[in-house]
Length: 316
Image 1: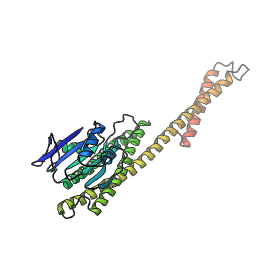
Image 2 (image 1 turned 45 degrees about the vertical axis):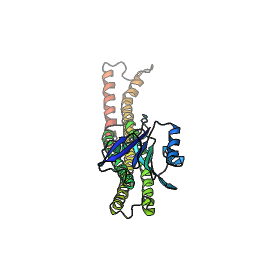
Image 3 (image 1 turned 90 degrees about the vertical axis):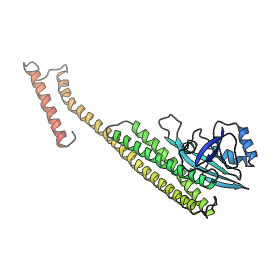
Image 4 (image 1 turned 30 degrees about the vertical axis):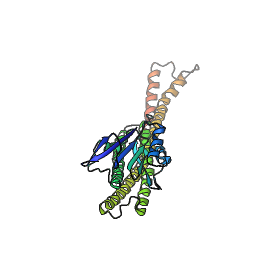
């Protein structure tokens, strides 16, 4: 699906045909011939339109004649319903700058970052100022990372509280899903940071003379670094948490088995005594009137002695 947008009075609006300063957004579903027609219309290499559709495409930029391609990775919710899969994954956004238009393409049908622009939740958007528009996409990509990181951290805290009273593997599997999401985030943020540093050094957007846009670009790079640091910190905390609670669950299991073993030993004492008098041979006091009570009393005394011994050894 190909949509066309143009800005008027700081707000985006959808138009039927692309103009000289319009934003062209391409997202699934679309036919292969639509990409070919778009590439032919704006004299683009077809790779500029197909590369961002690869979910494993790394963050990079490329120039071909007057066309420029930027690929940046952003987080989206995973569509997988498997419990062991990650909560978030990262998908690339392709941003293509041509003399006639600005084109974005993504493999996600509803991309949360681009959806903000489509829904007019981003103020002062001007598609005619393409460098500024690209920087605003970068800015909200970083905000999206920060928002997802905070949600993952809140979810981790809730799972930790459940782990205090749980010996199941379900909570550990949920922590593993969070860990996978953080790994995706760290890889994407590392790639995005290198991309932005290279773009700044090469002045890929041609904004060195615009102080406001240059300062905005520097702020975006700083925020990206802070998001990367947060992701690393959360990963380290999560790894420590999983190791600690894995040990706690194992220790709780060992304590439970130990208690069951001690109870078995205590119950074995009267069983051994009773087994002697269950044999088909003559036994002392077997014809006495109080033999049963004596056996019962002896069993209780020996069981209490065993319990007292275990208590002295701090096993109970």
